[in-house]
Image (cartoon, rainbow, N blue to C red; front, side, top):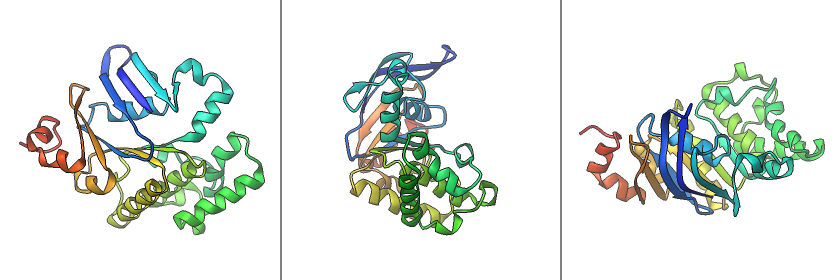
Length: 243
């Protein structure tokens, strides 16, 4: 996936991204760092085909990612099956009557048979260790359980690319450790992971590359996590640490 000179403005007035260029390489663990409002979430949405640049170009899997391209049902289904998005708040993502229905939803929307959907659902439930939640409704789940169900609803599609918005937000230490281990296993199996995060303490565990967005909505740095963490002036300039 690639962004070239991508700019985006909400309501054509409020800048979120300003000439951002970024290549996401297959199998990579990429962290997007920056202060609130710098454009991290918007950049994820651009990569997910949820919003489209005001200017610049985006390509995914060798083809242009445009609003017109995703109007083609076949192309849209193929793209949605390859790219999964986990929102910061699981409440906006978990909405079905039961956990089983939630995990099965995407597969059924893409036309998989009930049998294949059932097999995939069972596999993901076992993978994440949430078999006991299968008949619960969303309001019966804790925050950490909702996060697991939201991730399961994406993983069941077997995506090549996983996009996470603040994956560690509002999680207890045990669930943070679980998610860190899960992401390591996914990338070891070849899945590409892009995560917007403020979690500098876990940066080296989450990523092997980090891109820092400044409050001017431009790329400030693109380097390894240890190089980013060692550059105090950069972290101050990006408003990620206090002066």
